[in-house]
Image (cartoon, rainbow, N blue to C red; front, side, top):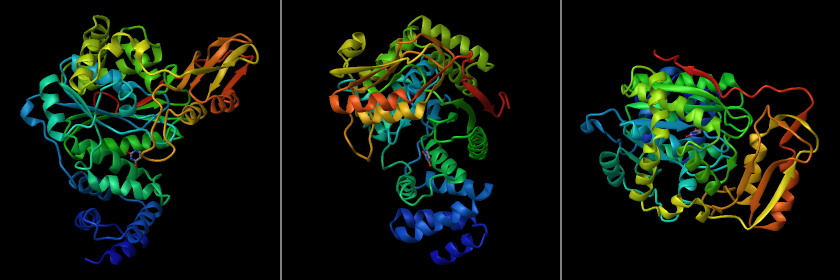
Length: 438
Ligand code: URA
């Protein structure tokens, strides 16, 4: 097989066979195909697309490029969840222990944040001592022992996906539904879970700006998962305003703790119960998601989910003193406030602007590998639809650099729009694919 012939084939609109796709991924993973040729193929795929058969073959080849975990010997269905990324998205931190507390093992491999959305691993690492740099062996053992572990992405799982994603990032070939679906699903398949819940976010603060794209991506990923023998449900959720009130690593840990104590923002709690109910049903623990939600609400209320979270943090080296007294978590030294310029109803709380401000304060990275500041971020006070009075605080910016902090106040002020007419709260869930049960 000549790689150039495969580029020409795709450029001219023909489809590639599973054998050809497997060859492409294997050779690229081994370093036998130069980046300039792979970039050319990616651009041909970007314009010509991949059909369903090609997308599935692409996913399988990426998944098989490294270790593929198998939890079959556990005798229970292991669950996993994936979010396409959003501002203030601390759902995994709450949902993983919540579902594990119900007796469904959760094995979660997460990424670090890049761009305006935060990463679960960065948030958890704001708890002193906590480490997600587990080996596959340590990860599997924790899932067996505690029904719960969260590990940072490693090169031993889907290495070809990692290389390809880095290349797509710099060649303008990220925004293709087939490539995104294959990228996400290959990592989920390799991580070994039998029940996979996908949270595809849509809106200004999300990767998928339109609902149509979010549903198309959901349908593609659900189809791939089904073909590969996994139970998959995708929920399209709103990300036009940040989730909850806290944006920033330690701030989000504090908010996640509040939710686990039943004292957190309603939108975060409700989303966790909604997604968790589906996970329990997918794993066969309950008859339907509604029963799952009831069970999870009980586990939040009686403190069992919080204990599960603490067990996970302690098992991965975290110092529980910081959870027992969250005031000890890293904090910023300076605070600036954004106040409402007039009375009225909050129409916009722009997740993209809030996310960018949090990154500029140091909560996220502008380039891969950059250090982050765990204590900084933005604390909001209202949700879209709320009434606010002139001069009322809309947000506090928490930073360690006064110059950046004052420059960020104006940018954050532009995130809010207050209008005279009454505004309805934003819907949180746009739809479920496939509608449950399938
Ligand atoms: N997230 C992923 O994991 N892969 C993509 O291609 C895009 C978003």
